[in-house]
Length: 214
Image (cartoon, rainbow, N blue to C red; front, top):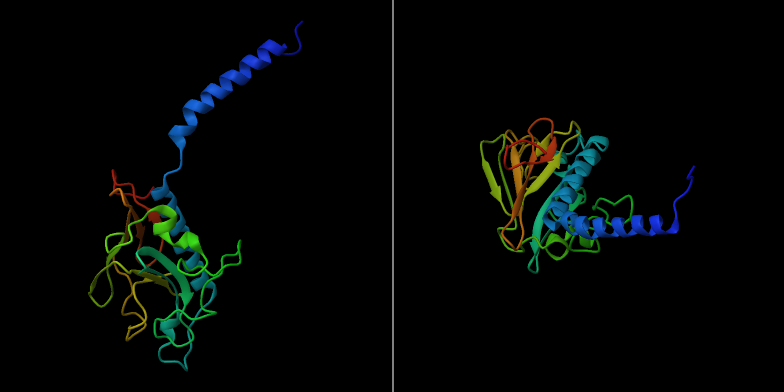
């Protein structure tokens, strides 16, 4: 009874595997737009996690709610990107040293325009660096329709999402009350939507064919 491959059979198997790899790998190559969306989605969820374990409520501080953890999208020198931070030093909307969230894997502050280059979505993933690269749209508790190319997702200790903090005049002014979409568009014109749901803050990438979460 034959109990082992012959050298010829082994060579034949290796050749077949090589041919299959050459055909399949190009078809499953990376999609930078999807990679960008997956990373942003992960960091939105990370921001919510930070907010839920770090309650900022302070009865002695009338503007305590401006210190909530947030992921803010912005542009700088022709690039679109984002930063995750808690504005606890002066609550004026500026990102100060010590306020940035830390990537637990790299130990870097998550700021696309500092050292954390993955959060510079233009240079890393070819997302447009103008007003159309990142657009946020949703309704908030004060009745406003927020449509911004410099959007914000902030969360409270319950995980509820907010849009905007630095100029809020009350703790719930910018509480998100409808599905809030963030659209990323690359330089080829392709785009993808990330949705943050009201109340729960659940975030997902949208399937454009069905309108539901992927």
